[in-house]
Length: 490
Image (spheres, one colour):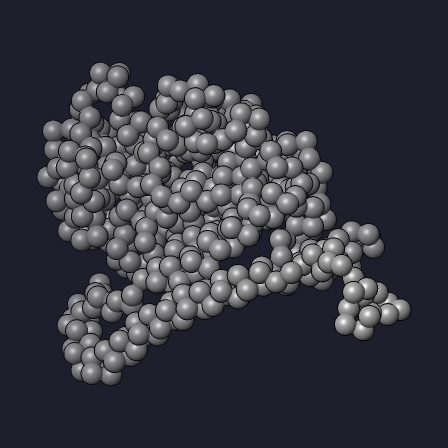
């Protein structure tokens, strides 16, 4: 069968792109002739910019001819250029026209815009027209299928469920010992892992906070591995937040950067427990890859994860406290009282002894000390080194904020782009100086932070050079009842 697959594709850094690469490989092993068309330039055979709106689907009508089957890996971000109801409805109807030209159409729904379609009768009619032309709509969980059919009421017999990892294969040939050695993980370490694209809905910060409450155990560690999918301000801000959080505990490390398929699997193989503290998600490729290596998983009960897990080794939790308890149980460690971020309500419910520990830890943080009262001297030294690194990194975090870029004068309404361009020209003399001022303020802030870091480091060196209390106590004391023997008074 000749198949046209529409999806992002490597080397684009996208979870669906990786998913599609594995699906294409599986189809080719079955003997199918597969051509991949991606929304952006990639290693795919073809690409087409769907941000052109309905015109892109006019081009698609020529691309689909000669294929026996059209398969679309669905995510709204790939096909809609804005949130306009009229524009999205027009795209839906253009899709429906193209679907009529292909013998078979199959759509794999990875994410759907339920709330938006529910809120608009126009959009609901357009979506129903589109999906009524689809022969097979694939979901990864029953709950997601039910929600879709409630929003887009098409024939249920056209829908099917498929395991998320049906086409997944291991990408590393290393043993667990080799993987640990290559990643610098000690053989006796108990390793928690959060891995994937760094975005707030992944909830990696929840795992860092929960791990900080585990009882003192130098052999336990938490690694957060991944990169931001896009260089968007909100993604970069969350990356900065994770850097500060992971640096607060010497047992946690953020490994920010691109992760190849082989390295991704190596991290999972080397871990003891994979933590998926998601705030929002429907299915997870990480869960499937953890199953390939029989790794234990701790996950929040969101989306269709519980259905996807089936008989796999997954512990589901409903809140942050349960997440911390599950991590403590997995590592065989005690769980400390709520950390220094505990709110007033939590503190009121604590026993007096636990409340004292929380106050001691908060005081230590305010004094600039280690956030954990039980840290060993080696751990304290490591924390001090990390705080020195923080001083150097602070200016980098400010400089990482992307510069302001004037939004393009686009619109789906006729004549509006021309009006926007005119407005931009007329107001440029006011806006341009403000943009320049913001850029200068960013640079000045970064330079000020760098200068302050140097001053703090110099002050710390001065303090470290002062004699300690024990040094002063060990010095020869003066006699209390008279001058020292051999003094001039003799």
